[in-house]
Length: 417
Image (cartoon, rainbow, N blue to C red):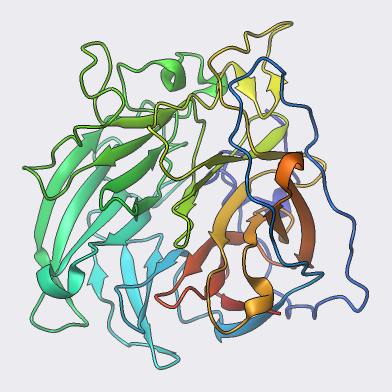
């Protein structure tokens, strides 16, 4: 596996890039947006094989944004290693920290007491471990249910669990945990982590391939297990969950019925476009490529995104690879541009109409942020819009559709023009 400069890589194993090492020096002040921002459009690094499963054509769109600015919401010291930001349908922001705390940001400040602290249950010592995902039920205001995904103290396996809020809206009930899914992990890395409710009301969970080099046991291509896949669960239809009847493998005896899409190495972050329902899945690569997979709204699922037969649009560790049956990335970039993709969101907020229709994503190692936009028959194109001096851990979206950037040092920045 490619070795990356040590100063960049305290979180790289969290993203599947290499081994965990010492933390970097303290963050330096965020640079302003460049006075002459780059305008060169990045094109996909390789041509999708002509006989591959064709991608639906995206609509023409995407406002031409040459650069963005980041406005500080939280400075370092207030949050412990933030990994994800989301909302509960109101103006509060909820931030999941690696070591098991969920923080609330309200009225521009971090509340002194965490919403939930499960640090005593979470293994966050090494690699891609910790409290990795958080999602609030679409009817959270009525039922108080929310869901988390974390690594356990027991063999570094992972669990999906349900919790409920207490009588205090700023405090969860710490004794309300219900384990919904226990995942045996063959290694400590490639745990995935994203939780999100889709526009269909079902809960989606991203799982990595289990972490073994090259995915040498073939988990991501094996439908008899759930590793290397996106799961789709009905959390309202049964205990601990039900299988949506239209899941693509719901009636296949030799496949796990939870699987929605597969062939993924480490889908650290994915998101749904709140306007169109399209799904964007970022998948962290192995040797050479980082990729964004696009799933059009209305998909029936079952997409095979290629790993470990393909990495990006390159045949992986073989002279020749079959092309039939795989769905190739909408966009990919090689490791001259970074080492670990951090997926984001399509901007649908109201404050900055000039940002609309752009999907923002970044790279952990380089601190670079791009916009991805549909270009009609040309597919998707990307252009860099910001160069940071920080390590990006995640993007976040609030109830109004405004977007945020989280860093390993504890910053939360809002994306602005």
